[in-house]
Length: 496
Image (tube, rainbow, N blue to C red; front, top):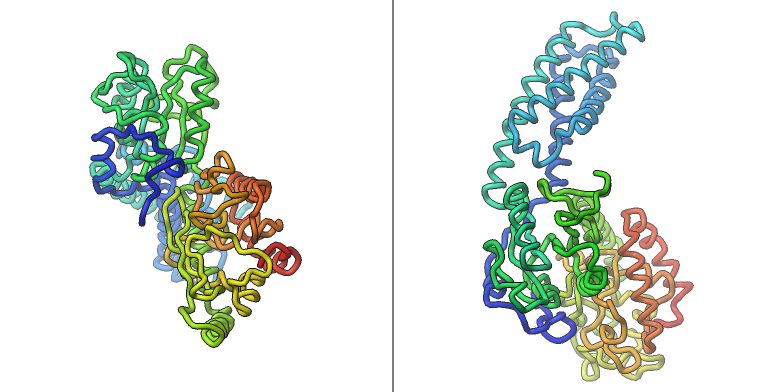
């Protein structure tokens, strides 16, 4: 994919160093999500315990017709999973400790089995449960857990050596304070953080080109371009809490990026309760901003997009075929229209649409908005634009991973409101690109679709997009999807 790399759209200030350009040019292995790894480990561990319990039941007792064991096995595996989490045994840092994690899970497993035996005694179910089966499951489960954890440790250590678990990280700030922070990160979070460099607006002796072995890559504004040209997972701000004005200015620049932003508390004299902090190794930080969709939510949204796209293509294929035939019969030219638009993190994607204009009058850059009665639009085009049938080929963009089913609508590169480019008309416009754009969205079902000829209209659309990003959930996506056909009928006055 191409990237916007100049002008305001890229946040370019022209100050990226040669080191920064070298980092951008280097191949990148994307970091594995610790939360996803832990989640998969939990599912596999609980499933293995349940399968072992059922296997021993079948081997020792022959299965039989008694179904009492099945709910007992499933409930015990679930409770064991909860106990392992309470014991803190499902964290990447613990996976790196073979003895520590094995001792935690074995202690939790023993506690769960004691609770199970107590429950059997209290409810007088000893005649219904074989002590041989229970003992075999306890011993077999302990061996299984130890073996699983040894394997998990080896796998996590391998990923650690490969750098697959390290988040690509930059520091905002410089000088001695940043040097202290770098030292603490190397001492306690080296396995989790891959420090790429520093960004600092100061250019005097307080901010040298190299701090504790970490290079200065540019100014703070350059970080926006840097993060759009190479993956950045985490931004750590090394500034005192008293520098309120500088912090606000920095956040105003960086909040458009889909990254986690943390404020280091290593040099703060104020002490808060432990619940106020999160930690990078032993470094306390304040959470200032999180990427909108991450970890398991990314997996759920990916699955939602793919399932809905496939089902929609199957159900709507007759409509799409009929539309293609109608377009071909009415006017010369291709059936599909391809247009460059801003995508996730301001990347440029090529979006598919059914052609709704005469070929010789098409506007590939959308420099001129379509208006009511626009002579460039064909008769078929008027209908498919009004009903949004022209957007259906974007289901292929969803399958390619360029679009989501639900998200902020991708805008054309040269689209304008009141003769001003969208990103010039609305401050913080690019914050809507912190998530993948969608075929439909919160703005569209609230009537903000179609023509955006005034700054107020594009501001309303952007405000709705930002609301969606801040309040995203899978249920919210489902609601928007269900309400989309309703809004096409009831709120289509601006679509032409």
